[in-house]
Length: 407
Image (cartoon, rainbow, N blue to C red; front, side, top):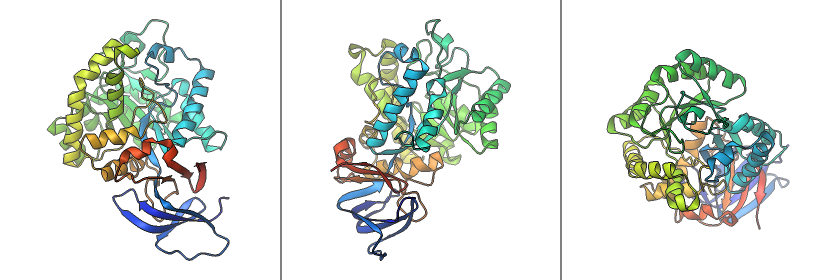
């Protein structure tokens, strides 16, 4: 049992657009029970004095790959065995938590290892963030991530499974849910990293996605679509998807559809940035660099269009893609600000909006919410890059328990 605690905050960013000074937070059994300027408590209540710092909700990364290393040699990642994959995921889960990320959504991990890692973290066997896990994504034969799309014949891409009809999609979704998936990932278009696909092509059909989405909804689970090109994006929205991941080519109609259907955008700006920044000189495959360059300008324009229209945008990094390292997740906030968000909007995208998308009662510092919080030496509203310096993250709390503390 975690003791009742009172937190004194010099600055409080509540995650929903509010900023307060000289405020206190009372936590009982992992939950925030009061937020007020001067909370009266019994003498035996533990007091943590962070009056020199900023207190804010823990960050939420709504799209990453916990067992992918960020190595540009994707084939090296694909040849990992189960023990190595599991150890990589454990190490990176710890790095992620230490960097202030208190909740994540894993968008695909080999051998379903993320499911076991989630269990280990939940049981306290290993440090890591709260995890929502998508299991294996569903793709078409020859689509993004499918071995038939150009991988060497000995490679089995263990983070995807192939479906080629609505019935196959329905069965696969049922099997992933039965295995413990918290959400279902659908591949609606081609992708940047796949060797033999064009990222502007369609993946799963609208009918195939609808069948899988129906199964997820039946189990009260959410769905996400890897969707870069316009046709696949619209197919996913019409099928009933909850979030569009990447969203390179959003036209006005697609944005309007997202607003009308309450569909989130998880842009993952860092993935494209790092692929282009590193380039082939650092070992990124030429096909990936070329496709990233083709999509970059459209990606930023789509982000701007969605932001202006009021689409709900949640922070996601795609950490695990080339040079997109776990533990450096907060760089995504800088990119979102560069693309037009205010620092407050970027913080909200990385806290309350992300938590809402993951359907967890966190991401806000208010009564009734889980006490997942950061203590930061700096003011992210003045300089959002302060969240990238892990030494500035003085404490990380999950359900009121201090998981990371730095002097």
